[in-house]
Image (cartoon, rainbow, N blue to C red):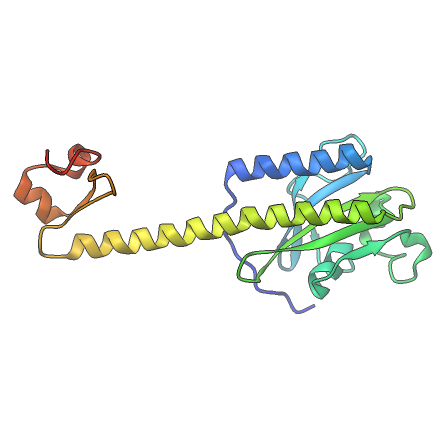
Amino acid sequence: MDYPEVKEIKIPAHIKEKWQNIVDIISDHLDVSAALIMRIKPPKIEVFQASQNNANPYEVGDKELLDGLYCEKVIKTGQKLLVVNALQNDNWKDNPDLEYGMISYLGFPIYWPDGAIFGTICILDDSENKFSAKVEVMIKEYKELVETHLKLIYKNRKLSKKENRLNITLQSIGDAVITTDLEGKIDRMNPKAEELTGWELSEAKGKDLTE
């Protein structure tokens, strides 16, 4: 397949914990063999979070080539995939997940806010499973929750880059510059301001400007 554009953005630990809770809740509530959040890393796809139930054969960090996997189809089409019983489906009877006994599958794509693919959220079972409309709604809701987390990560990353550019500009200005927050507390000083006031930023930060 032609591999899609992906982003190498770190997922914070507290978000990983939330995602772990999501897959655990799904597997417990639906009593399926596995609930996974997958992240694409061409030419492979990685198990990013995996439900912690005894029936789950997948572990966090497991990687597979994008070569006939259920999740590959989801990523390639950008659509939900439902496989009730792969053993009775000519399109899926040879897929690699059957090595783990996973014959049924339901998955949705997960996207970054700019449309780049992150991976998938999916459930798998070792017996035939039609996955009701209510189950589909549930997984889709969790997909959207994960994408909301990605929006926050993306937004914070953009703000951090903007902050870094602002600091670089501030440090290069020849005039003394002091900035404050909305309450008048100092949050930035450039070297010239430190020189003229006799205060270092580490000492002045958080103090009232009048002080």
